[in-house]
Length: 262
Image 1 (cartoon, helix red, strand yellow):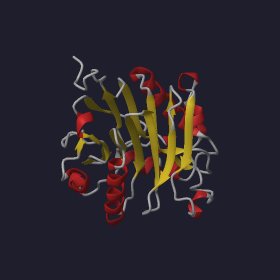
Image 2: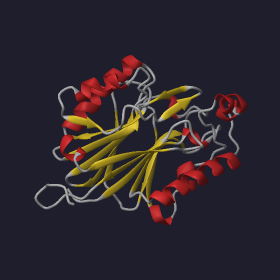
Image 3: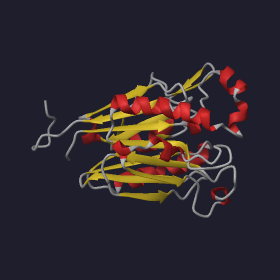
Image 4: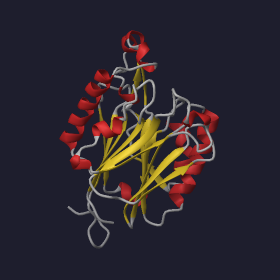
């Protein structure tokens, strides 16, 4: 595959400026129902600074709003993307037949991405759960990236993880899957994807990506094909405007023979 690539994955928490502190959740509870544009712009400016510093080729977002009552009608992706990232797309995260797509509170709740290049992409939907959207982005003929936001219900997550395994196995070349997997009972939930050693988890088990008060969890993860893992590195980046950290995936260029380039 070609390369190198740098890919950012961020759970924005709808740019409400609520971090992992319990005091934030209490003090800013009202922002879940209505969040002023000034608050959102401040969070988006912080995210924009992170993007400018890391300069990824592709930015993948979950919990981003394209315009609902709680966000005062603001399309957060449009406010974030600039001329440097001229290729962007945003889509409601609920299933195609879900009434949540039109309800005034939830109709803007989305996933989306922005990129420097016009990468071919598809929007797919898992068969299980309420949050079902999966983005499939082909960075080149030999490398496919997926990202999504999984269910809070463990039973539903187990079914979604089996679907994700099939999506990844269906790709002939290198593949990576980023997302907020909501692994509330721990990384052992990933066993259906890891037990046959087809895929590799790039996260460190001791480096949390989510904080609520004194509880630290690894919810945001990156899985990839074993061959890709040999030239991939993952960094966890703090986001003061969210209770999630961002993930920064870097994939080095492969040599013509397929080995890693020094």
